[in-house]
Length: 278
Image (cartoon, rainbow, N blue to C red; front, top):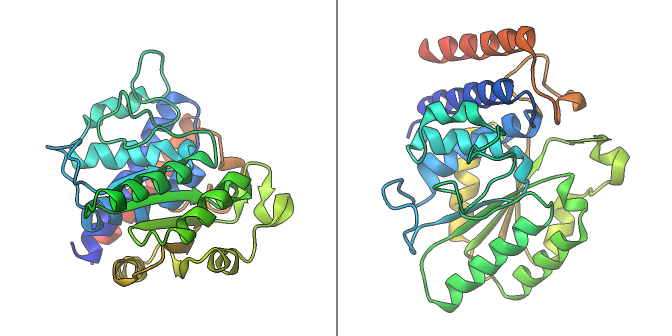
């Protein structure tokens, strides 16, 4: 898929994120919007997946370790045809299968339930190890928040992945530098993220997480890397695409009201129109 088409898809996914959160009146827009470009690329170009065969044992796996960013996962699953787009507005509502965090038992296309930070990467490592033991060709991708990597369990999993040389594993860190209580530097600095992961025997690539050329190059490099797992540290803007949400910590976990919803959708409509003129 061309970069322009990917950007258009990512913009539609951002619209779906805002719609679902506005309907729910709760949720996490900031980290969902920052992850939209990478998630779009994974589902439209990188991963071997099919909505017609969501449980194919040979499919690639994606684990959203930062499970509170579920709106971006639901949005891309809807765009790909795993779930109806009209169901997105049931996010977080009583009886909906679109819970506040992904649930693999009820949502087609979700490879692992997530929500308790730090645990997703552990399950992704287990999936990658299983693939090695079964001599399978599938690859495993997991996305973590930069605040999430303050959890000790993340580093236990990283140590194991490096030790077992799991080159079928790609760990993606969404480095938007904001978590619920402030900047990651203020709360409990994980920096330098790249050097820490290198010490755990990862091949590390740092990119602009909103640049599709850099995303494509990094994932290609990950595929060519043998004998060690790859980590992609993507520098992103929290709340990307919505003017008043960008780099604002209060939008880590708050839904837009009616007025804010109108502004956000106008921002994204204008972005979409600009893309159509390219």
